[in-house]
Image (cartoon, rainbow, N blue to C red; front, side, top):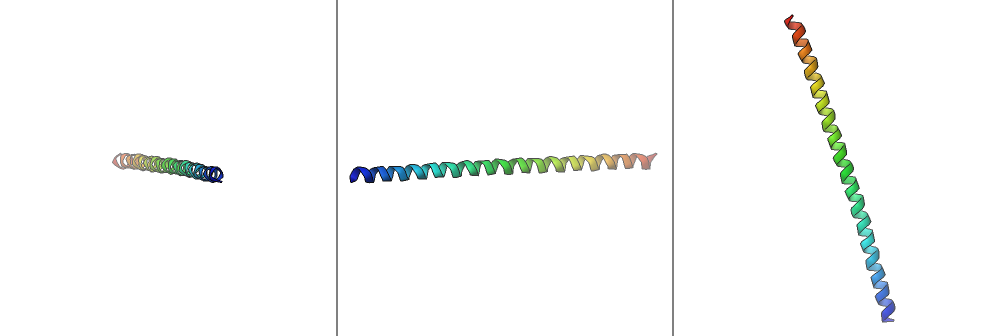
Amino acid sequence: MGFLDDAKANAEAAAKKVGQAVEDGIDKAKDKIDEFQAEAEVKKAEAERDAVKARNDVKDEMRDN
C-alpha cells in the first residue's frame, strides 16, 4: 500500500503545481490586460490634452488678429 499512497501523494502534488501554474498564468494575463488598458487611457488623455491645446492656440490666434 505504500507504493499506492506515494503515487497518490505525488499525483496530488502534481495537480496542485499545475493548478498553481494555471492560476499564475491567468494572473499574469490579467496584469498585462490592466497594463494595456492603463496605457490606452494615458494615450487618450494625452491626445485630448493636445487637442485642447491646439484648439486654444487657434482661438488665441483668432483673438489676436
